[in-house]
Length: 270
Image (cartoon, rainbow, N blue to C red; front, side, top):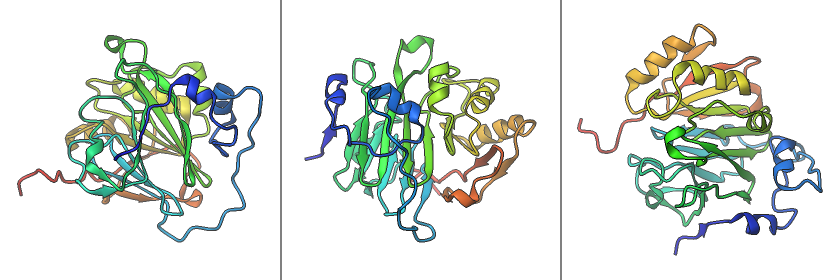
């Protein structure tokens, strides 16, 4: 039977203090544990083989994140995720059908849902092998109520990845503080149900990550429009692959937008 992680706030606060050993930002610790300051655990780990750390985009908001020890996390599995992809965990930022196709993921993953069916925040603070996963609440937009979206943050080795889900607003000062050490920012750019292009760039400026990966679009033309808009402020690179190998050495000194190749839908007709 598939394991499911529906952690309420009370349960979260009862978790062992050593449940999460490392965070991308000490501010995350302050959200959950003000009595103890965790120290970031960056060193002392075996150097992973080339290509072990990577993210791979499956379209919309769905990615496979793989660590140096080949721990695998799938984010927001959509309807186009190839059935049978194996993972150790699945994170779900919101309960829309294009984000919660958890049945497509094999390997008996733990399911980490950031939002309850009542559209309230479901706090996550856990380790999945060598990937630390936490989330913070956010909004999809005025029509969706106070929460309805969860920002997930993943730390693996010395890399920090943030997946904004269906973010529908500029970051609050508290959210900005938590995200200010992010290395790779996955941000929705469809400009229909989420932020417009100007506000997308404002969120990028709030975080200042080395790498921005546009997501949450289904037509390549949407990425072309965003790239044309963003290039006035940031370098934009279009990759010929939906997979991006990660390391600290490949991170640019200043923010760059990397547009991954849109993967073909398994349901498309050739």
